Length: 582
Image 1: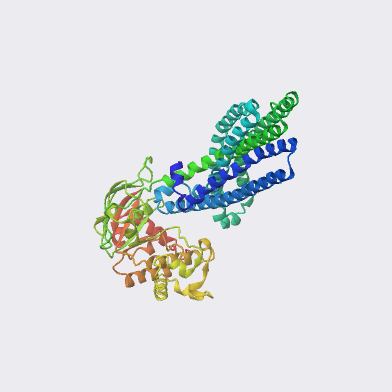
Image 2: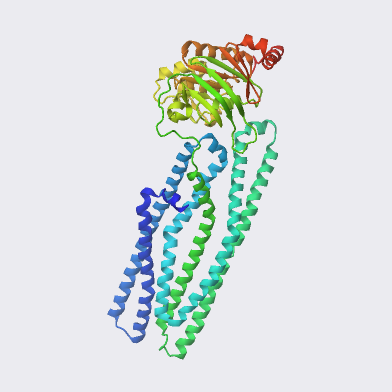
């Protein structure tokens, strides 16, 4: 775990090393000051001159100034190192997630990844900050103060050693009790964030069904569940403070009582006033160091689970990789499925697709229809290799998709998925996701093909209109047409529309398909649809049922020979189809 996290330090190694060095110098200064103070007390007691007194005073001022300077430098270096480390950690996680396949994303929930990128990184950042400064300073202060304590107090300093086993046993007990609780808390954090995300995304539905109170109660229940576990963990961690206080007071009582007794009875021969004062100072330094160490311990205990969760993200290997010597050119848009079966998880009992055999010629218009759950989307996701087939082979342009460079393959396969997503930014910025170098003329042509240009021109700012996050300020049909235009700008060899015209009227749907035939005749076009009208003029139509290809043919052939297709067609004609589907 430490090795994985250490890779994110990178350019912040220098401040990460300087912080402990400055802290060490600060600790040395702070340990020398009580020794000189004791010497000064003894000199005053012996009747030193004003010159000698001034010399000691000046030296103490210099040491105090140096201690302050080293402390400030240590704080600055520590802040730079910890904030930089956190930045690199977030960037490394985000880059890693960008390389994940859909299978990897399925393994981690979206809310869990958000929690790991935010809360978990913050916990690790705070722990790192304490490690490079406090966790270095405290042991050094302990060692120096112990040594100086023995130098000044002799056998009396053994009292410090007696407190260590007591503290050790207490800290071990706290660790064993709290770690499982923190592990459980962070899993519940994921669930809580998931609930929040779901509620915010579905706010319109919540309000339309007047379910605000239900959602509030659901959130409160989840938040209270997190609170209960966190409270239990914090209560156990809180034992750390009284344990430390107990040790401090034991040492103070011992040093004050036994030290005073020794000074009085030995008349300063075994222990004088100066040594007594410095011993008290070293006692406070030792116990303050132990107190700070316990705080470090608490922070590291909390951060350990966060660190493990971050390492899980960084160590996760993408399920899909380009081969060592990949094919980088997609010859054409032909597609072949040879005995293809697919399941989403290795542990899944049922195949999502079973024994699929298809050949699609380059430039064909292919319609896919089937009931909900018939695995239409599963079929097309294998083409750009969003998932890998569990069995069999998928070929694009005559080459196994596993032999392609992933980026080159996906650049030639444009997919407009069921859940269209627009990002915050202007319409132009969203469209250029398809081609970052596209000219304004190319943007307008793609929008004319997707029937989006007309409504864009009606906006006051046209193509410079700002799209809110998720496209919340445009309608479902407008969003779909913008996403189709974005896909067209890739100028792909294969264009896949996964029920991507469901929110537009049939006239607009027909115009989009007409534009495809006229302007991109060489591009293979695969259209998944729920309504027959959207695919009946396709070159061939694939009927899916239960993860299998039930039939392939033209509209007329399927009406004659396939019961599933005929039933869908007749039911839609009886109800007038979906002309008014918005």
